[in-house]
Every structure is written in C-alpha cells, then in structure tokens.
Length: 261
Ligand SMILES: C[S@@+](CC[C@H](N)C(=O)[O-])C[C@H]1O[C@@H](n2cnc3c(N)ncnc32)[C@H](O)[C@@H]1O
Image (cartoon, rainbow, N blue to C red; front, side, top):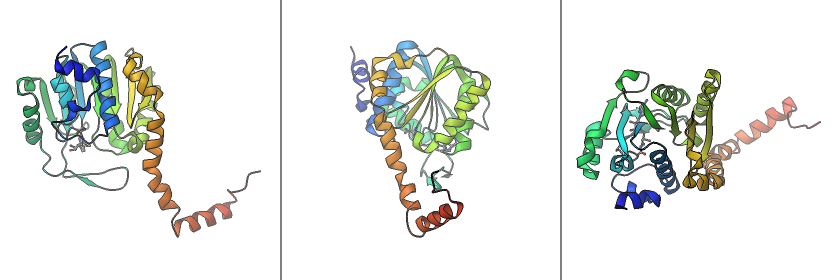
C-alpha cells in the first residue's frame, strides 16, 4: 500500500496539509470518506467543484491516481455575498495563485485540472465535456446561488453520482430548494448530512452510504445537528436581546399566538 492509499484509508487530514482549507477536521474526514467511497464505486472518477479559493479541497483529489479529471469553477469576485447578511472578502484570490499552490502538491499531476473562471449562470455545460461522478458546491453561500450551482452540477453529473454541499448550516434553504427541484423532475435520490456540515445527495444508483466510513459518520450525525444549531444560535441570542425580545413578546401577545388552546 503506498502512502496515499494508507492516508485515505485512515481518513487522515494530513492529505489537506499543504494548502489551507476552510474546513473543520470532521469535515476534512468526511470529504476523505466520500472520496474513498467514490473511488471504490468509480475508479477513474471525475470531480468538479464550484468554489475552490486556494485549492484546499482539490488537493486530495489531485493526489489520487483514481481521480481522472478535476474541474474547478470559481468566479473569484472581490466581494462575496452571503446568506448570513455579511459580505465576505477573499484577498489575492486568483486562479494563478491556486494553480501555483497545487503545483507544489503534485506537479506531475497538474494536467488533470481544468479551471473555469465564472459562475454557473455564465458558463455552459459544454465547458464540462466529461461526465462528472462527484461534485462539491462551496461557492457563493446564498440561496439563489446554491440552487443555481446545484442545477449546473446535476446537468453535468453522470447518470449515477453525488453532489455535496459545504456549510449546510448556512445554505440549507438552497439545499431544500435543490431537493424540491429533484422531486419536481422525478429524479430519485438519497440525501443526508455528515459531520460537521457536509450535506450529501446521492443521485441515481450511487450508494456511498454503504461504505463503512460513511456509515460510521452517518451514525455520528448528532455532531452535525448540534454543530449547526449551536453555530446558528447567535441569531437566537440576537433576537432575545433588548429591545427585540420585548418587541417580539409584545407582538406575540397582541396576536394571541402565545396561547395554547
Ligand atoms: C469558501 S471558498 C472555497 C473554499 C474551498 N472549497 C476550500 O475548501 O478550500 C469560496 C470560493 O467561492 C468563490 N465564489 C464566490 N462566488 C462565486 C460564484 N458566484 N460562483 C463561483 N464561485 C464563487 C470564491 O471566489 C471563493 O474562492
């Protein structure tokens, strides 16, 4: 077993060590578990992600000989809107900088990376001529962008494949809209959350959940539930502050919504 095989089999976060990635340790393990399950179902898989920044989430796929192609779609805007109501800034965010960093990880494997600058509303599916087996949505964290990215991913996905969302505690409305979209189209799927906040949608016959690594993380998904609610608790604390608490109480009493009959 070579070093890479041993590291992925152990879901070792060392596979993320060369490029900074905005993921928690449990998320890194989940991403590796999904990668491990994907390469088992589909050796020679194609990976696509929307939102790459420095290439942190690309690095384990770059190192993987069972990953044939990597598509990285990133608009790299100066300011990124976000459903939490705060605009986020990514300084020095460029494709050239990402490629430089990835080149330090595995220079001999760089030819499998295809970069596309833009967002999913501006680019054509013909720019992704390969059928994709695994997608990761981690671009603009707004409801509309998440649904748009999901539709793009679904349209380039192989008949059987999976789409993951990062930061699902922020993008949950876009995720719910994405599942409604599949329901409306009559497309069968299985969807679940893995610790901390990676939401997975298996489309068609792509049973990642049967992989022991995924099963183990599924059983531990209390971590996802609690992490998401605890992270979002700042909004409840805000709503309970003076004068919002008093105002809410006043409105509820006026409408008599606080009475159980
Ligand atoms: C959270 S970072 C990605 C982090 C990366 N996946 C990782 O784990 O290291 C978000 C990225 O999304 C990109 N982005 C922002 N808005 C976008 C959009 N509308 N379409 C595509 N990418 C976008 C930003 O340029 C940024 O690089």
